Length: 104
Image (cartoon, rainbow, N blue to C red; front, side, top):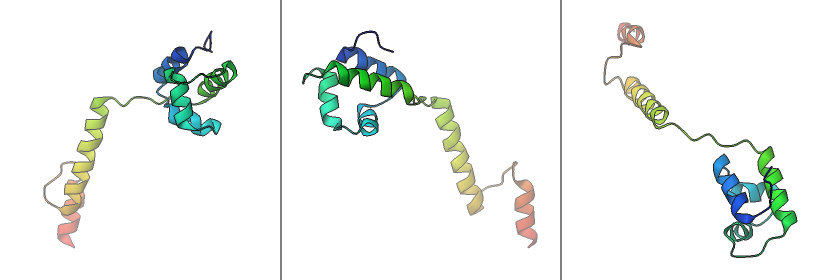
């Protein structure tokens, strides 16, 4: 848990876990704009609100940032499947499937 309920610390804690102010506000049932202004220091927020935000963030699963290599691998796989279904190229992975289609 965050030691002191300072808006900047709570904002940093959310950022480190990959949780947006909008997501935490939706979970807590409060207006996301209000929470964003409190976390940015534009509007005063109560200690109770900041504690509730910190507790709710602890219970939420953090978002894992995607590895760029993983994203590229997924794009390559989708491209492979797209062209394979169109029959535009031979695939070593599905060579048997292409032969079966040609026999039918």
